[in-house]
Length: 93
Image (cartoon, rainbow, N blue to C red; front, side, top):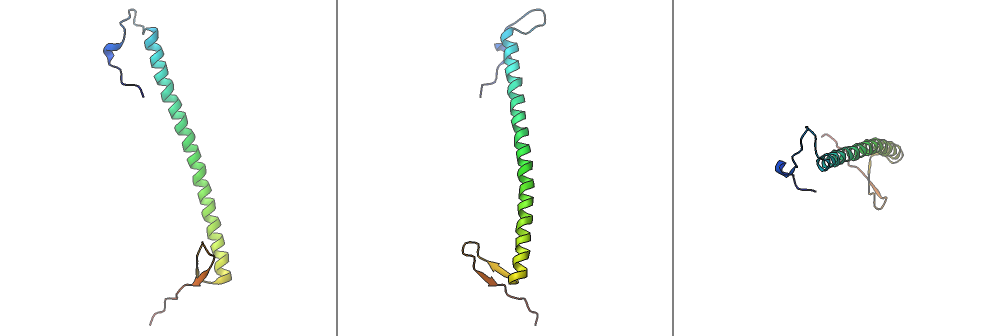
């Protein structure tokens, strides 16, 4: 990252026109801003895609849970071993 320029570092040019070096420096700075904005846009698009995917995956998990619940009942499943235990039923006295 470049240091900030002090306005006194610019050349004095007549006819209300920037020097070639000043114009190039300004163009480069604007291009860096534009490139960074494009990268941010790409990241945001990727983020939106990932958010859509996580919604899909969440629905898959919920669907699988419903299928397993209909087969095994109200159980807790250890994802490491596949073993399951019945959940305690809350009974009112």
